[in-house]
Image 1 (tube, helix red, strand yellow):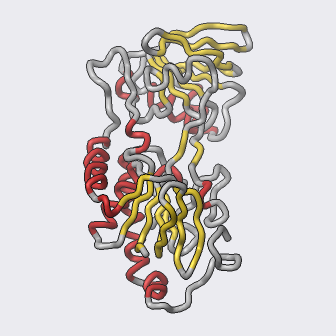
Image 2: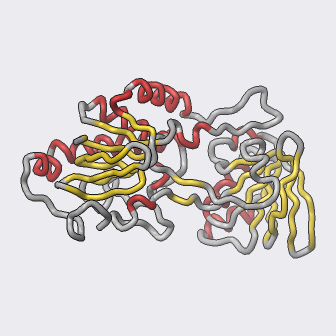
Length: 322
């Protein structure tokens, strides 16, 4: 029986794991790899070296620490969450099942892709899915953003602080925040392509241009970088039915990273936190660990360890989802 199981080895999961171990908790990290999306670095032809997202140095150190703690990690995919004998049960395909008094979900999120020719070939070679970390690299450059929601609007505005020109390609219409929309429409460096569809990503060793189809026909625009900025898809399938999710499928948490289910905490991009950033995920992971520690040493978590009654999930109490 573990005190806590952390699901996911990205920045939030690694920070949570090290924090839990340092607090003396019986800790287990279940993940297929270490570092998550920080393992992917955007390469650009005008840089002398590969740029790494600020915070990756910390992630690398945490990865090395957790890899050394072979007692605290299992390289596997979590397949199922259940409830058995007053504990959470996490089943994996590769390594069997594990039990814990609490869980921290840090499974991250995945980008929505364009699914057009050239996208995969130039992924992280001039084409990326997060402008916030790379905007300062595009000083006096030309860049394209594809998307129609708040994330795309913010990304275009972030890039316009540095870039000479930002093409904002909106396949249908701009959605959501009217204030952001007004800022984008008024910014002299942002050029809107409303109703334009990306047909293909073109380039040589790096992405160099986009072929578009719009109301006025086809055109090709040259760029120094392409950012696909649709809302992320949270990897929250494991806890669907266990905890409250927002309409986008993100895990709802409070300021202490608590979910709606006692004993289940969450951190990082899988949650409804403010922005997708490495440093934010690191802090959220550490905060979730602190909350799990408090849960285990005071209140309901402590009562469970003493064999006192605790609320059961909906259902029959056997391994399985409520």
